[in-house]
Length: 203
Image 1: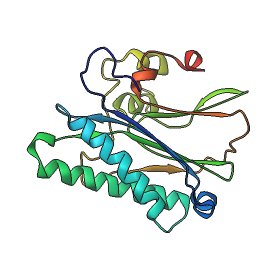
Image 2 (image 1 turned 90 degrees about the horizontal axis):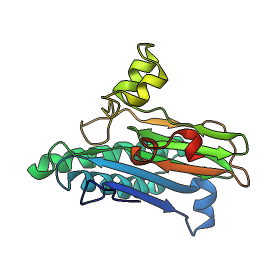
Image 3 (image 1 turned 135 degrees about the vertical axis):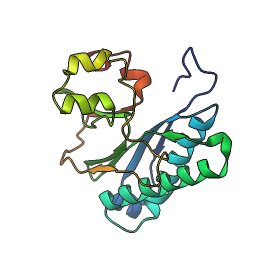
């Protein structure tokens, strides 16, 4: 993860979990997660770290199937970030995106809030599996603007959903019924990548 040329701190956090316990691994799989924080000085960094740490712990702790566990972990993380922002005025209004992918027994599952993305790359090409929770995506879905116009829209980074900005959050938790095969690649990234490269360049 790269700080870039503008900020002095990095508000993106990435994490990967490979459980040592074979039973846990067969039931809950591997977890990869990325979060992109937002807020005043250092607040975004706090939000993204809180999201990643909480989701990681709560996902493996929760006694439920993969989709229920992801939803539970995201909801607990959302409450934690929101409550922290109320306790410390310096963190007021902080929030973060969060995108998590589980690979379990060669199957893929994912959960998502915000505009960080999850791509699957294989011989067939590149496939974006997440849908951005942004104002611009809402306009595209309503047919008010085209996908091409959305790429350069001045409000393309305005989030419709984020972790920690409200006491409750709507979480996408999805089983796309996709196998993770040999030589397939998973890519999780924030807008710091796809704002500058199109899908073909990423591929």
